[in-house]
Every structure is written in structure tokens, then in C-alpha cells.
Image 1 (cartoon, rainbow over the protein chains, first blue to last red):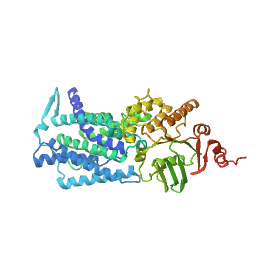
Image 2: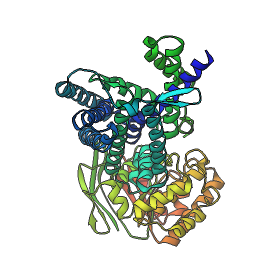
Image 3: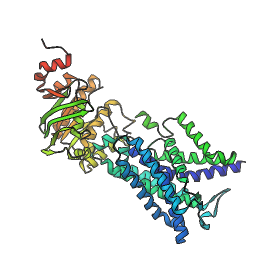
Image 4: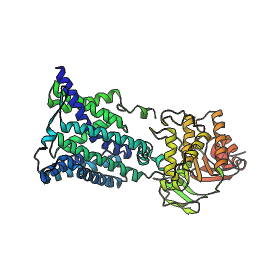
Length: 290
Length: 237
């Protein structure tokens, strides 16, 4: 039993890495513009289909699709931003409807082009088992987790050290004050959506490489990313990583100890429990005082 | 340097600012006073570009800035503080200033940042998280420091002295005098306390119900029957 639990913890940790890639883009765009991009999961899905296309049509590794997946998700994210930015009244509510509609359009476009079939990678190399002591994972899961660690660290450094990273943080925390410091909010928001798109592209390739994809998956991915964003506490990069791992481990333990049928329910219960105890999320304490 | 011509702002059926015209020189220190709801902060919002008037013009340094967005006005030299301090979360005090300087003034000058920190007695707090590590008085000084870091030609100070106790207020006034003298910039300051504004500003403008009802030296203004009536609600004897 102890071995099973240890394996579940390990699998949950690796899954959490991919969840972090999915969620951090949503958290970034939400933090900057106070807009929840409900099409974010569909952008991840679109990127995953790019990996499928590159593998099935060009006979290349799904990893070769990373540039294409990033470009497609970036373009989609920029389109969402440009449409949302045109909303003048009641932006927070109207953007929900707009991005939800974009998500439906993407889902149906995917369905039309690639049918409703389930797809997964045929790469033997990516599906190969990798042993770490007594723990096992697919090579793709390990790659996804390591890529997530690298990208999240790079994002963290970009936010901390670069001028536009700091501008993103400034607009995210005090929009009016940031404007009066000379920061162009529209440019900053577009940059944050583009970065979100880049991360969604990577998340899509990681998803296709380690799991199965189908057109209706996008909405579930958005919900998962949203849960993680709220669990983390808005605006916290390490919080997103921690919340992703926590969610991944909770789901893996639920599957091991109970049933895969209640895996999503466990995530929701965790979400409610954390918000009940820490209403500002796991890493939202600093904002509470400010 | 600053010229407002017939500025009118309407929120629904309410006229927040009515036909206000005002001129201010490049190194003047002017107090803007008036009862609550007189339109003082709205006027600041018009000057800084956060609110668009339905009528009138704003000229800054001889240039019509009506069509310039708020962030470009900041780059042109309009510095602004808020009534409730708005520090950047998860940025240190120094980072707040550096970001303001980089985007507002278009350059990074560490010596100038050090000078501003020292002038506003924030050197010791420079490494602290701006949103969680400062007391109210320090937050108020940070507001001014951030605005100064953008290297403004005109500083709009919205009730920076409010909420401070007497000694703190006195020290802050000294700092503002020092800022004015050292950087030779115009300062337009909103303040409720008549005594404070009288000792700080050689010129005072009074707004009431969105209109300027007096403009002159503190002595002239606070002996004006219209001003007394607006503050006390009774006719001057």
C-alpha cells in the first residue's frame, strides 16, 4: 500500500507540472487584465492538436510541434485579447461570455477538422517507462514536468527582472497608478496574453505527449486552470506551481485510494476546502493586507 | 505651464466640474481646496487623463493634451499621487521608483532614485515590500517619491497630508517645500486643512459644487464671503 501511495504522489507531482503550464497563462492574463479567458483551455487543446498534426501528417515527434503549437496558441490568445479589449462596458462580465463563445467556436472547429475521435501519441520513445528508484512514469510525463519547472522559473525571472515583467506586475496590482507612472496598459496586457499563449502552446504539446485528447477536452482544461489560479491566490507564480502540484497529487491519490470516477470531484472539494480556510488562496496573504 | 479652459465634467445628470478655467505657472505651489464633493479629485482626474471632460481643453506646457492618453501625459511630465496610496504589490520600495522612472522618464538613473529615497526618508525602507512593509506615513511619502521618479514638471498631490498626525503633517510639509525648492517643479495640492494649506501655498483656489469660487492668496481667499459661506453654510457677518 505504501508503494502505491508513493507512486500516486509521484504521478500527481508530474501531472501537477503540466497543470501548472496550463494554469499559469490563465493566471497571468487574469492578473493583468482582470479578465478570465474562458477559451484558455481550448487554446491548450488547439496546441495539442498541432502536436497531433505534426506527428500524424509529418511523421515527426510531437516535440517538434512546439514552435507551431506556440505560434497557434499565441495567435489565438492575441485574438482573444484584441476582442476583449474592444469591450468598453462591463468588461469583466462581458469578457466571460465572449471568451466562452470563442471556446465553443474552437471546440467545434476542432471537431469539424479532426472529428470527435480520441487521439494520443504513438511515439514509443515518449511512452517509454522511466524508472526512478521504485517509481515509474512515462518519459513524456517527466519531460512535461521538467519543461514546466524550467518555463515557470523563466516566467518568474521575467516577471521579477525584466522591464515588461515589472510592468505586468505593476498593471496587475494598481492599474491606474501604473498608467500614471507612464506604463502603457494596452501594450502590457497584450504582452501578458502573448506570454499566456506561449505557455498554452507548451502545455498543449505536453498534454498530447502524455495523455489523450478529444475536442470536448478544452472546457475541462479551462475549469482546471481556473481552479488552480484561484487556489494559488491571484498573481502568485510559485502559488500556481504549488496549487497545481497539490491538485495533481489530490487527484492521483483519489484514483489510487478510491476511484477514477471521483477524481474531478476530489479537485472541486479541495478547491472549496482551501477557499474556506484561506479565502485569498494559498499564496494570497500579502494581498490580503494590502 | 498648466492651463484649463472651460472644463466641464458630467457623471450622468450630475455636473462634477462646471466650466472651470485655471492657469498655473511652472514653479508655482497652488492649493486646491473645497468641501467634500466639490470636484477637486475629478479635476485632478481630468488633468491626468483618467476622466474625459465633455467640454473644455487641458493645455500642458503650451500643448493641448486632451487627446493624449493618461500614460502619455505622465511621460510628458504630469506626476500624480492618489488619496489612497497605491503601491505596487510584490515590488520593493526601490523597484516602485525604478519602474516609475523607467516608464515615466524613459531612463534609469540610480543616483536620482537614491536622492529621492533620501529626500523622502525612505532609504531604510528601500528593500521592503511596498504593499506590506510600510506604515501610512511611509506609504504617503512613497506616493510622492513614485511621482517624483517620473521626473515631472507638475506634481498633482491628492490629499497626501490626510490622516497624518500633527507632527507627521509638519514634517511632510517640510519635505514638500524641499521637493518644490530642489526640483523647481509646479505643485498643485488638494488639502482639507485650511491652516495647512495657508502655510504651504502662496496661492489657493477654492472649488465648490464643481466651480471655482475664489482664487488668490490664502488671506484673500479665506476672507472671501463666498468661501466662508461654502464652508460654514452661513453668511459672513
